[in-house]
Length: 163
Image (cartoon, rainbow, N blue to C red; front, side, top):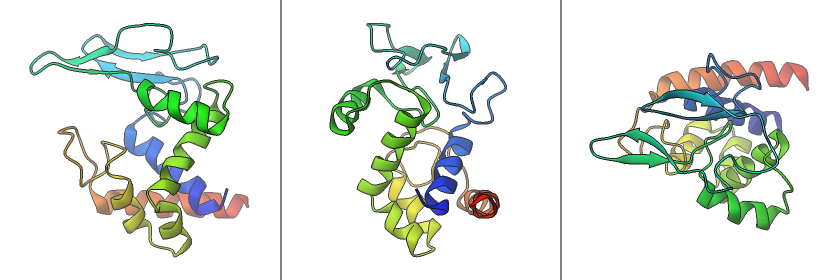
């Protein structure tokens, strides 16, 4: 994984609010979508937290919105199963969560944009996956593009210095 890809993964986690959640004990990899009952984490990584029939969390009552979004990148159970099979993943560990998010980025062309030093296009390319990115129609909180670019550059400098 390139420093740009690592930085973008960190940006997504920051934007989704998982890595900065006050209840995370694992850099956001353990966060379940916040619902009407408040924030929650999970501690068992053998599979997606909703894999064994747990009902989706109620995010809001009117109009009703439920979600199975879990982990650092708030992956829905319905997508987890496909990516788990496609990538041969054995669990919902941090490595598996990173692998799925990286695959989603590649499918959207974001990695090519990052390789061309164009994080703005990468953000727009991924807006249909992550509700916190601008440009989607999910009706949820979106972060401003300028704030996202500033954060990306900040995180990229950290990842570049570690490389």
